[in-house]
View 1 (tube, rainbow, N blue to C red):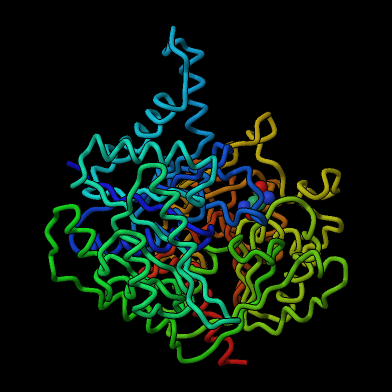
View 2 (view 1 turned 60 degrees about the vertical axis):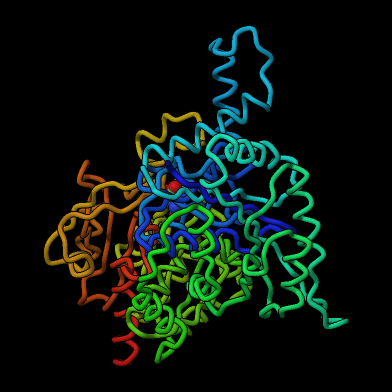
Length: 540
Ligand code: GLN
């Protein structure tokens, strides 16, 4: 019998349900259980692919090409496993299926209603992940906050599941914020009490309450939460702010969260749990010996969540090399309109040119690439960052005046980056990019080979444009090597790099290697980049 952990949130969104679920998953996994995690997003979008990263944060891409909520990125990083697009359930997906069934005639004669028809499809989607993965424990995180109108059918579905699977096979965990009132110096628990009441109104009594707070909670506050929340004191767990998200599992483990969960699920506690590797990683991450400054050039820099997988990949690489990173953010649109001096990008010891869509800010990024290339500072470009690196080199090294990507200028005299042929025929936006893990063929005697130490790798993609194969000859003649192509179509460029006699470290990737980076197994491109930044800094 599969076992479920349902995680709900109270008081506010962004209290860290995602990190809590990921941390618990990792701890259960270390006790020998196979775990998968599902994220439920009650919004009506079918997936996150069409959502603006500026509002919603990064779109995380799975191996199978799902465009999902960024929490799936946390799950993959903490658990070290690949998830499927099925692990992200949205209201849009559920309703699309219910309406399709209705049109097909599956419900003939019936009035189609939220209960039971919508809730049945929700439960079926959850069970499908359970069947596909045969995981021992399935964690289901319900996005949003208890009390949101759009979350109700999902809460109802997980209430019903308890009846079907039996109480011993499920745990309800409620994660809610306990705010600190500076004016009176008090830790408040009332908002948590109210959110638990709201949850009970729906028919769910939590088994465990995780109180999020800035500082560690005192016993008084815990007692109150225990009393009003109707859970034993030991089931009030406090997740206080940690220096890094990777410390959260250690904080939860100390308070015996895993033991509580396993007891409730009538599973063996398997006391021997070895977290030493993880602890080593967290310590290196928090206490790195030397600090490196990295300039991050992008368009959505005000919301750091827009680039979360890249930030995490850089951190994994930094911990590997035992250094600390200081990320300095540059808004490409500010560089573009002259409000920010592009030479400031060179304050960094290395430069990351971030992904993006839509021509605003392109010229700012191109300027940043130019100064970085001319200064000989290490540069890594990701996706759009790769495409614009090609544009910059075409214009300024190959002398192709006015070269551009057709995403910015459809009438450019030198379209060095163009829409992929298949893309030009598409009429719909959602889920239509070149998506997911695809084979990349790496050429010998290239920096790309040094990075991966392999001739074939699978990286995840999410793009509509690509380097125009007609210009490869010209670009290679001035020293921009195509060091990897698609295994499926050798005309499709995957990695470019400047020859070492032109620049010590200039490499750019069409895919998004950041999506596969793990704390204990950093992504090779980021590991190599941080290594290069370290050695070139010493040299200068
Ligand atoms: N806008 C570019 C494309 O669609 C780059 C996408 C990206 O950076 N993810 O190809």
